[in-house]
Image (cartoon, rainbow, N blue to C red):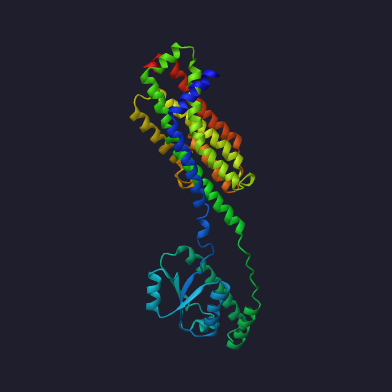
Length: 383
């Protein structure tokens, strides 16, 4: 134990610059959480009213009722003007569409004809056009029923139209759940911070790989094996130093989030445990690179490739739901998937089998340590 501690202290002293950098990155991630958890609150959260241009060429009670329906019931914003003006507004996307009420629209309804329909023009606002068409068709259908009931009598039709308007049930709008918006913002910050942590922590592990590489080239391995220091004591001391450097990044973040009151509600304990397992894997990967690779340039390339490719496939760069199916399947073979994906699931309110995720991350780390142990025990590791 004493010899392991000596190796640990010596290795940590050699990694002191990385230790400071790791801590500063951790503080930077705390600041990034504050930024990304408040971005949602700075945006307009209310739904913007759909703007429609209206050209009334009928001038009847039905045309007026249609416009009242669009504004009062559907909460749309109506823009009046001639066709050329509204066409310009539509092209410049200041309105979603143009509704033309043709002359004779009401008369055609009373006569039971469908040869004078509403004319609606859109550009590419597919979402608003879909539900606007649906509402207009529903409204026109109700007018046809009223016209049929009036049997072509304009006065009776007008009375039925007024009565239908009065009997329209009042729509009550529930207040927006401010708490849900706040929770969503907090989860956005958490996801961003730990996805960035997964990317950066691997790059930071290059320092430990370089330390091992330098010891290989300087003959430290041969002196360790010739001395009374056992190989596992040397490896344990170096790994503990690398583990400490990585913890210097994640501990400030976890402590900061805990100080913000994000405890059980945001599964901070589970996230902390997953982070520790991710750090353990990163230490194993750094050990593997330091013992196997033949040059500093190769180590740098391997570390950057690991940080880039593993995190991209594993879902740290973007949610895997946006990735093709083959990439979603391939992600299961990366440790980053088992680290990042549970955070996405918890953010969406789902339940996570965190013992399984922890176990898989531990297995990835164990594989790296086993391969490194075999390599260190061979004669080639002394070269």
